[in-house]
Length: 450
Image (cartoon, rainbow, N blue to C red; front, side, top):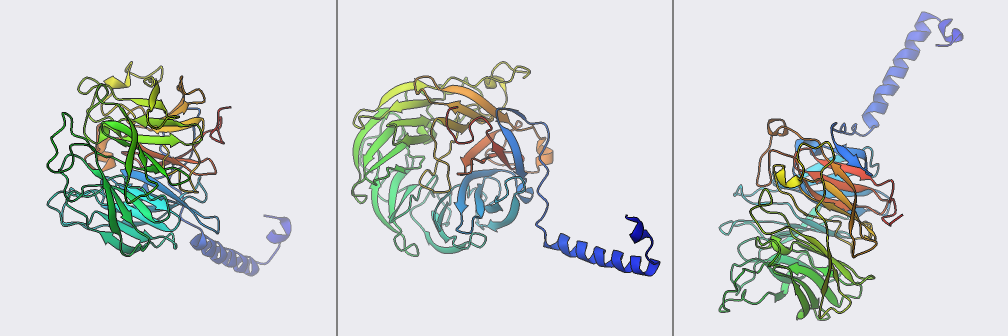
């Protein structure tokens, strides 16, 4: 305090202090809630944690989707594994994410999952993974022009079994991972919906593998579509994983999709239903495809090998395997020599998808891939014949009793589920026990090989 303030009368000082206190209180009320503290104990290489949200006590976020508004606000939407509903987080300031709200979904069944979400512009589609006896819809369609207050426009009932990783790349059609009328329950099919009027979605086509249609002979291994579908910039071709293959489809007429070519991945690689060919991400300009399985069993001795690979797609009629990613190695001080010996699933899961979304960072030479108990991995694919592990983030462990949740993905050890990246370069990744981590890659802020 300055000398002249000290010299003021006690009465004047009291008035000033009171006024300052009122002003400070008003300022505190007008400020956003303080960001959650970043949990300690994580390990990283070439990744920096800049922010964190504990999702208002709802760990177990799953798929992540981004929205960038015209007034330069950034929002992250998250499906959930352990709670039925969806979270909205304002990530305009990545170091201070603001948890906006939880949108609850009420089902009569505890086994209904609301883990999946896809966004394009002002339309959001949320999947409802349901039991065959559940009366729930297959998906919900939302208007998110007011990003903090989504308005449900419609629901699509479909047939029993719900939907999984759907994709809406904008325009007239949405591509759904679901069961279709007239097909056998041997894994989801690709169902194409016309949502030109999002209040009245209409099924216009189905594409399935041989053996899925009723009356067709059962194949040796059940086929299944995990999703999502990726549509080329000109809208004429789709690339997707569809067990047992990576598939190229001609969708110049989306009401009549046709096979162009396929590359069979299983056997010999991992087989576990729809998860066997879990992800396919085309790099349209480079004419290559990243594809991977999803680890299913704990440990590495129960299923054939989990895999991630790069595929030459210059001739879409004959895709060609180029390389297989090496297994990530634990840090030197880890108590296990391989992640195979750590509890939980080990293998690839998700990478930065939704490339049709203008808020999502285009993937180029650097890939961010969640690898379950091996955390979030950074891969350099500038040479597609030698994908190289160049960084990682391993979230800290957390006792299940502290996490206060359980569910189909819960394990004694922590693992990472999904990842996305915005066009500013910020990376968002969720784990099973804490929430959503916001990271920065200082070596590759533009997503390119340095």
